[in-house]
Amino acid sequence: MLAYLSGRPGAVEDYPFGDDVAVFKVGGRVFALCALTGQPGSISLKCDPTLAGALRDRYPAVRPGYHLNKRHWNTIDLDGSVPGDELADLVDHSWELVVARLPRRNRDALRANG
Image (tube, rainbow, N blue to C red; front, side, top):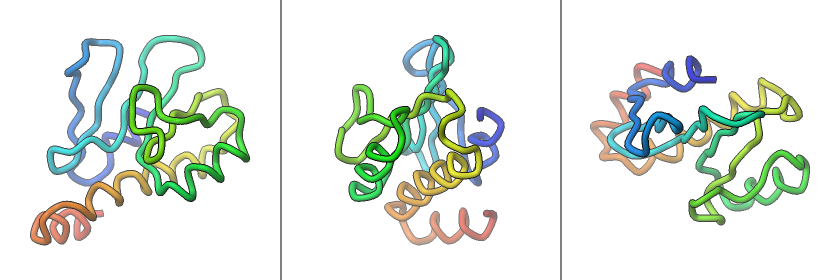
């Protein structure tokens, strides 16, 4: 998961909360938080509110964002119950939501590299 997150265009990995949480940003804005402790691990991703609710209904491993805006963020337990390809799509969705709010010049440059 960490390699996939780092591979998003413009992604920067940071540890502002200590060594237990990897924070991934694009254009200076957070698109993912990945807990590095606990079993299973978890990841928090930005999400369209309608999709966020549907995912919570579909998967017990998906719940409102931990210490985040519950409407716009989901925390997903990495227990294998959410298929890997769907998890990758959710990472991309989160990245895209953040990139969409960046200035046009930054957006265009990131999307050209994606």
